Structures are given as C-alpha cells and as structure tokens.
Length: 301
Image (cartoon, rainbow, N blue to C red; front, side):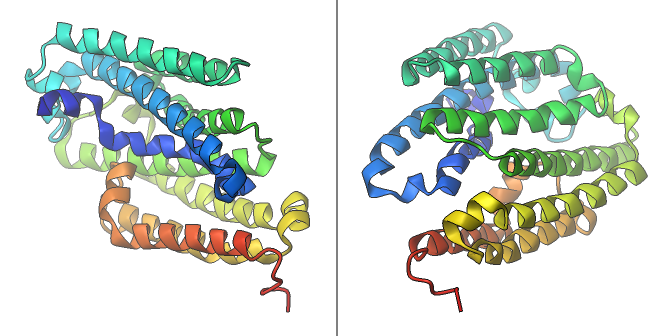
C-alpha cells in the first residue's frame, strides 16, 4: 500500500494550495458569512486538482521509467523500481482522471472550473508526451499550471483576479522551476548524465542569469501589487508591510539554490526548511492581521 500511495505523490499536492490564493487575497477566506461555502468549494477543487495531478504524475513516470532508473532519487519511484506494475499504474491513472473531472463537473454548474482544470490536464498531457523535452517550453508549462490553479480557485470563489496576482503567480512558479532546472544541471555536472532531454538547452550561467532576473521582477511585482489602486482603495497603504516576508523567503530560496544546491524539489523545501516555513507563516499572519484590522487604522499614522 505504501508504494501505491507513493505513486500518487501526495507530497506534491501542496502545489494545489494555490487554489486558495484568490479567496485569501480577496478576504473571503476570513469572512464568517462566506467561510463555510468558500472553504468547502475550495477543498473540493483541491481534491479534483490533486487527483488529476496524480494521474499526470503516473503518466509521466510511466513514460520516463528508463530515464528515472538513471536518477539517484527517481530510480526509487514505484514504477521505475518495479514495485508497482505498469498495468496497475495505468488503471489507477484512469480512475483518478475520471474522479477528478467528475468532481470538477459537480463543483461548478457554470463549468468554468471544469474548463480550467480541463486545460490544465491537456496542457500537462502535452508536457508528458514531448513538450517537457523542449527547453524553456518545459518551465513555461510548469509555471502555467500554477496560474491555472489560481484561476480555478477564482472560478470556484467567483472572484475577479487582478493582473498583478496572475503575473506574481507566474513569476513565482517560473522562479522555482528555474531553480529546479539548475539543480538538474548541477546533477549533470556531477554525474555526467542528462537526467532529462531539456537539460541540453540549459547551462549554469544561463539559469543563474534567469534566477537573478526573475527574482528582481518578482519582488517589484509584489510591491506594485500591494500598492496598486484596487488594493489601496480597499486596505489603504498597509499591505506593503508584508513585502518584508516575501523578500526574506526569496532570499532564503536563493541561498538554498546557490549555497546549498538543494533546490531540486520546491515541495520538499516547503516541508523541511524551517526558515521558509516561518516566513510563510509570518506572511500569512501579517496579511490576516492587516485584513482584520483594516477598519481600526492601526497603521495609518
């Protein structure tokens, strides 16, 4: 049973928490009158995305069995190691896809969420069947997946997403995807083996330049978002205080990438790195604090 659970990669389901971002930023997640309805819908969306993501993971593992066997960590995956049979894996994959799409159909009578999650699934199928082998395109598809998660959460919560929110989500996902590719290049340098075909289109110098570039753009975009007209009208100037924790978190991620060379798995960093966890908790707490005290003018003087 442990191998079957591992096949689904439940640790990577943390990525689907991006569905909660639109409701979080809109303040609906904290509104007592809307909390129950919002939360239940988003939990349903989280489950749907998780099922479809696991379905994609299985397809990806199935197609990459031979390459994964060359990788020091991926060789331990259930399909690559032979602990789960190929036919069984494909059967679970199909069941997960049907369940995920079925839940999506039931959640939103307007079919907006089903449309978004359908695009996500098709885009990732394209990724599995060849697009992941094209450098630059591979990280763009991974980043687009995070944007679709945010759009899915907005569709379920009936929330309008601002341009800045979409841009920030895309840039953050791109930043993490580049750091992950850098880890793959470092592995290639140490072992002499290409762990994925797209790596041939990357070099350390190229990826280091991209990391520095998108890091700067991401920070500026977040600050611009916190002082944008719509948010200023709703919350005043106070949201820019949360930039401190965003900058601290990005600095730590850069430290993990450049100093420790351990940026291979963003979700693993989230689960294990205490500094990242602390900055995330403080960022959420500060945002909640400002939302909660928006009518008390604590920061106005």
